[in-house]
Image: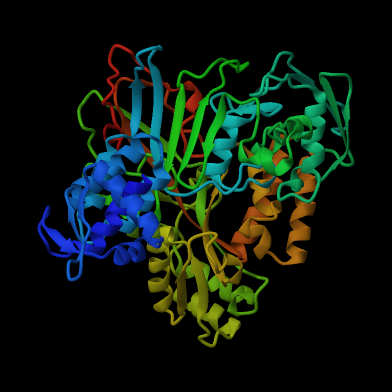
Length: 615
């Protein structure tokens, strides 16, 4: 690849408008300067390029005879060949670097992305000396932020961690109850302050070592430290290993749903002492007990392989390949005809109309209503108009979720009046009352101060609608689009838009208030946060599920009524699947559980691609 890139560099530098095969003047010194090397190394590179029949080199000999070079491989075809070879070999980093450096002024980018789209999807790969292997390959738009469960905050990271690690217990969405995972049994005392978990025997980490109680103690003791998810163990007083396969938690306060806390992705089980590895080294390729092991994790690719000895049954898929698309490639991937439609991580298309037709009648429809919502919230730790409750209430009256959904008709969304779709279903849009709105603005003494908004570009439609509606009441939004993690942070914003995913039950709702990296946690004033913590403790201390739900609804209603947060919309995910693909189900994180996906051998073909999986 090194010599090939040098060919492209020289071709760009010296060929100009000359025809392929014609010679152009180029001194050895000019070539060395273009390649940023010495004349001696330039000679070696030229010799290599000649051996590969990419150039002819005629060194000038004698006074007045200048050296000449001829280029033999067409720029676009040769570049396309290099891109395909790099991608086919799994070197997506090299492919995307070539794409960014050499495709300007050509149609190679469009050609390559069209070809790459055909490489995505479910594939059955046959090697001459082994059985056929099933691989799922698809693009994602965002890189993984962390593989450390103690720091996890985003849905993509959480989904990936659930492939690599197990937890003590698991929340079963179909049955809507807690089921055994690494622990086969658990018990709690009458006061809700002592929880005991009994581990299965024979659960193996990816390196072959058996899980035991020391691993569980290490995991949770570490989680109690200065981690983003330490909220999970806020009430835990002590953790003890009772023998090799029993662990007991002593709590300082009652928590009748602690079993649900240990279902959290943040409670994923790690090997004691990081399995003998240095911590920094461990996170480069973490070892868990989950259904997949990590083969590759870099800026362009995440590759998983099946954990052959997984206690819950070996996955049907042999490999899962996630290709992280660079930003300059994303608009094409999202909009071009025939391309896979993706947003927020997977190959469903939230923006597709529910009336979109499948490629043929035998394709399987698959839909999922997101268990969570998009919302906006005010940064109450910054000075500004948002410090006035009257102003926040006025903005809430202006921003009607039903109006937003009508504006976003093509996104297949539903008005949100609470965190959960079932809560929103019990409310309706409130008609605008202009006099009440004007009264709130007068009470707020709003003087026209602009509202500074830092927002992710994926919420461009939402913030544009918001800007238009507020402008009708002389409220000005100053918008700055910033991708998460790039420079300016959302803590600098007067308000923000984000999406909360309630992956399981009320514990995920509690996480939104207590996770130290969640925007809601960082935007609330200290006294409000202390009040919320008190209400959460009251909910946890109640053995009655209805009472707990009522307490948490009180918190939600309080934040909604005083305008601290404004709920926007719930999202419907939908796609169609090729009839040979089985076991696909969108979970509440908006992802497919890889472990249960399989292909019908009689129908699956090597050329089955993600263009056949588009919405």
